[in-house]
Image (cartoon, rainbow, N blue to C red; front, side, top):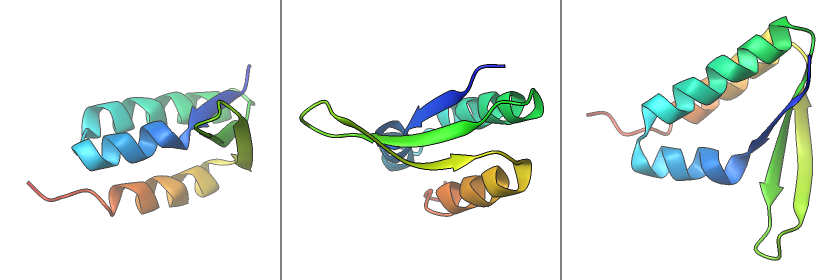
Length: 77
């Protein structure tokens, strides 16, 4: 299984837009990658185009903790 790289810039944009569908989709993909033996890498894309990898998950518990943290900042509708 290949690794999944998630640009946190996208996560932050979806949080701002309260786009739970996009967030849910990326977390479902991440879960699938982990179950298949891959890893999930978080990276930030700088305005210069440089990619800065700063965290990786190799188990579901860590991914779920990150997901919980992401979803706690969404607005209630």
